[in-house]
Length: 130
Image (tube, rainbow, N blue to C red):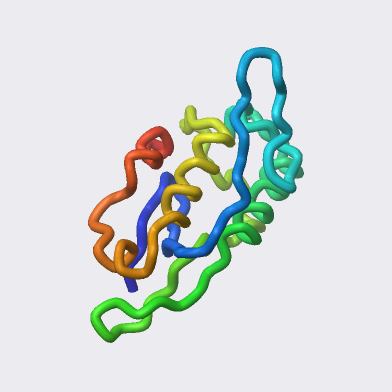
C-alpha cells in the first residue's frame, strides 16, 4: 500500500475534490472548512474539541477510496483515527491552513499522478516536521 506521511498523519492520497479553503489575509478571519477552525490557527493551539472537529472535517473532505496502481489496488485518502489524542504533536508549528493546503494538493492529483507520487507535494513541506 502506498502512503504519504504528512507529519504524524499518514495520508493515503486521494484524487477527490476538497472544498476550497480561503486563507486569512489582513484582519479578515476566515473560519475555513466545516469545522469552523480558522486557517491562521496553529494546530498545537487547538482545544481537543477543535482538533477533533478539524480531523473529522479533513476525513470527510478527503475520504479514503481505492485506486489501482500498476494493477494493484491501493487506498488513497485521509486515513486517520480521529479519536487519537494529540493528533498533531506538540512540536508542530504548522497552521490549520497549511494542513488544508497539503490535503488540497494531494486531492488535486489524478490517479496516474497519485500512483507516481514519490514524495510529498511542495504544499506539504510546512507540515512535514510535525
